[in-house]
Length: 411
Image (cartoon, helix red, strand yellow):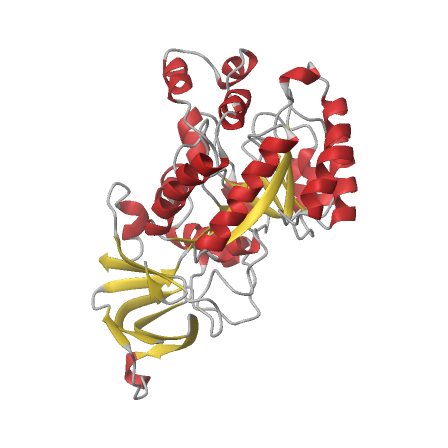
């Protein structure tokens, strides 16, 4: 199948093949080609360039993108799409004055989601999750990481991971599975995080690894959840199973989780709403990607990740949704990009870089996704007719996507 997109007003994120991420001042640079074409063969980018240099091509399908902008699909590196039910009651409680921590302490939060998920069949869980996945694909997400973590028993965690695997089998987008081994301490452990971590290591990890259900491992390193010692112990043991760390850190407090992530060669450290100078220093000269989740800050009314400080320190930043039932019931990466510009003062160039090429890096798929490079997957967004790419974050309440292609096929 050969697809040709012509008369593109502006083709964004055109990169050399050896660029896997952008950092610091480079994040303000978004390479583009105006009045461009892009050629897709068998689901991959085959060629692109100026319209005036377009060779004669016998295409099976021609798409005229006059007045429209084309860019690589969003790469959402942090989601919890597989969950059961919702937590709208907790939302109402927060509106009435309860804090996130108070809700969790009263049996709500993650433990509430775990109770619902444990009682939900695998078939029903898949049905609910597939509906969410289809929605985010239509919103332009062409690659997504999905975590377990709302099971908290071996049976329920395996159920979640099997659903993620089934989604990967049945949908064309790139899906990466993360075993969120330590998301919260189950009630029957009476707050003993060490005992739970020991059981995860001895009973859970071997089964997950044997069934090859995950590529990444995650832990919520946070006050009231899991300590730095818990985190180091779990990640050290996970190395034997070739599970790459991607961890939750610094959402509410800075307790050394960033350093634990870097020391354990984490691919990414996510949240980072609370950061100190030591955290930033530890990220320098590492291969760990800082990931900000602005919709979580928006929904919970907590601080936003100081991304400008990270970038000013020469570091890269990725953006993701954190799609989950408790703190971010949305998988809209377009809103993420807008929120990053409006509330975190990123430029449109910085936000788009963070949501595409750097998001791909945070999932380990930078060789195949996240930029316009010959040979990469043709996961592409075609906008409606808009004046410039700055209009994408500006018009935050409008759906500006006209067409989404995954592996060269319109979805």
